[in-house]
Amino acid sequence: MSITILIVDDNEDIRFTLKEICAYAGWSVVEASTGKQAIELFKTIEPDLVLLDYHMPDWDGLKTTKELRKHNTRIPIIILTVDERQEIANTFLHAEATDFALKPIKAPDLISRIRINLKVGKLIGDKDNVYVEKGISQSTLNSIKSFLIQQDTPSSINEIQQSLPIAYQTVHRYLNYLESKGEVEAISQYGKQGRPKNKYKLV
Image (tube, rainbow, N blue to C red; front, side):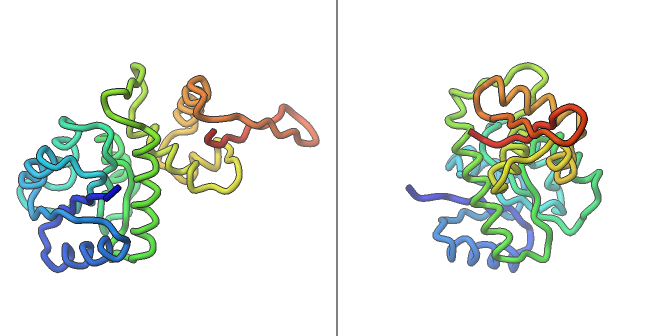
């Protein structure tokens, strides 16, 4: 089945580079130079994933993310940015972006991130079948699932929390939710003293 990536960036040279990377990986591409144009294309083609630049005139990446999420909460959105500040990552995650890729873009890293996020999108399933309980954000679920997919061995809450801009208590609550849904397995590990510590893996 063919994969379609929507690239949103006001810089034509960057769009060309991203298009070449996606073509190398075997994915089809649709391009938009503005956030508003992206919304129209998004509604028309419903891509499998969106690559979205943060810094754009008129609608920036944050505004565009919020508008995209009004139409679909399932499709992964990867933000392209040179800004590594934690508060920026938190703001985008709150707006339900899925992942980040730092500029300048490195092809192997971007291809890996796209593949992982496509897997997460498939795990979520069709949007009509998605039900998320009150107080549970789909984007946060996606982030935790995305992290777990990348791990070869089960991960602790601390390991997940240190890699994602999500509080320890939040990670714990979401893992409990995923465990109750049968999507995550908790594995108890016993040390020399104290209570056993749980590590988690996707089922």
